[in-house]
Each structure stands twice: as structure tokens, then as C-alpha cells.
Image (cartoon, rainbow, N blue to C red):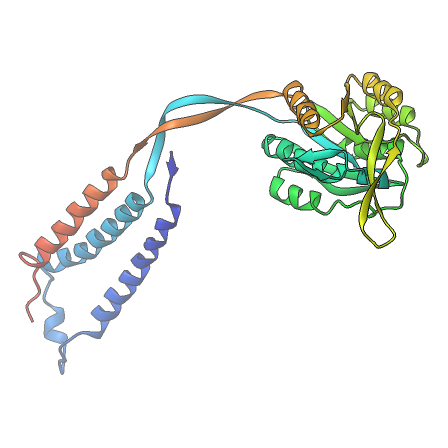
Length: 331
């Protein structure tokens, strides 16, 4: 049994006020006598006593109305709602090489990080039952957002990720270790790191292999993504007069190391060379990482307000009828 409108119970505050003003008026009286000795000998009739019952009827009516307005209801048709729930840490490269503009959205060229952020947002929106956190890294890692179910706040934090926010470099091993540490206290059955980078490890105190072994020990699965065109990539530069131009630059991705990291932890390595490919990679990971659970969901509810409002109406009508007939008070 649940109440759809619990704030309706605030109407019950009228009952103590009603009782207070009733007895306050009774004590004040409307006639004055020099002596009440002869009156005290008179025994009150049942009609005099019955007038106190009018107050009781009104209080009962208010109580029943409060319960009726709160709309008590009970689920009568149940179905099973299936969902997924795992803990995921997104580890994203924000080093200078992510400025390469070899990815496009709607025919317009953008740098790698911009496109990655847009794709990751879609991934987050589709994982409503998962706790997700974000770690960005360049020469060192930085926890942009801890594990959370507040995906609106998560996406706002993702917007803060910018190239140049950390000293340059590519500390893949240290970034994996940071993501693993974020999952260390997790009680989820499935713990996942999705690492995206466009380079090779050249910074940090922990090697990618050591970090992968640590993740494996703690039951963390790592999916690795190498983002970028194979070969020369257009890199934005400034010309003599400040005009932005593109210079082809070779940015090497350590496919072998990323493959070993993924295989060591039971994950998989993906290579994304354009926006469509990157979307497909996150879709594949989304399909592979699903932990199903069932929760009850009621499709139809039976309303019980009528069982309170009808008796309330009867109480009010009874009070009005008695107050104007047998228990009427003449001026």
C-alpha cells in the first residue's frame, strides 16, 4: 500500500485547531448568571451530551478526507523490469596530441578530444543504471569525477576536460592505476575501465603492464581504445599571419601495448580511426558489458480513496442533519 499524494496529510493539522476553538468557545459561554447553584443541580440530557458527538463526527470526517486525498493505492498487476548495473571508470587522454583534427561530425572537422567527449556523452546517457567515473590524463592523471549515478553532473564534469589542463605527456600506466584505485572499494559484480588514448606511454612512474596486473588482481576488466588515423594526421598550427593551417604529423599509437593490457585483464583492444568507428566501438563495449537484474514494476494500481471519502461524506451529512434537528442549539 502506498500514498500517491502524501502531502494531503497536512490537512490533519485542522483537527487540533478545531478541538481548541470548540472548547475555548464552550468555556466562554453566551449568558451570565448571578448564581449557578440551582443550575448545577440539573442533569444534562442525552441531547446535551450528544452535541459533543458532533465534534467527534467532524474530526472523523477530516481524518477520512485526509486519507482519501492522499490517494492510497496498491499495485495489482506486476511485471519484471530488466536492467543493467556495473561500475565503469572512463580514462581519457587529454594530451597535446589529442588536438589532431582527423575526426569529423556532420562533415565538420574537430579535434580528437571534442569528438571523444560527444561520443562518451551518448555512452553515459545509455548507461542509466551504472555508476560511472571519469579520469583524464596527460603527463599525470586527474580524477575529473568519482563514481556516481548522477549522470547530469557527470556530463558537466566531462565538459571541463580540456587539452592543456595537465602537463603534457602520456602516462598510460599511472592513469590505469588511478582508475583501478577508484574501483578498489567497489562492491559491483563487474568493474570496468575504458581507456582511450592516441599515443604511447612516455610518462608516469607505473608501467602499463604493472598497472594491468594490478587491475587484474582486483578483478577490473580493461577495454583499450586507440583513437586516431593510421598514418599522418592533420595537426592545427598557426601560419605567419596567425591564420590556422594544418600540418600533417605522424602520431604513433602503441597498438601492441594496448592489446596486451586488454588481454591481461580479460578485455579487448579497439582501434577507432574516425567518428563512426569510435561510435561503433563504444556501442560494442556497451553490448558486451551488461549485468542484468530484475526489479518489480507495477503497471496497474487499485485506488482506495473512495473507501475513505464516502464515509467522510456520511459523517458530514450526519453532523449537519443532527445539528439542525435533534441537536439543534436555539439562540
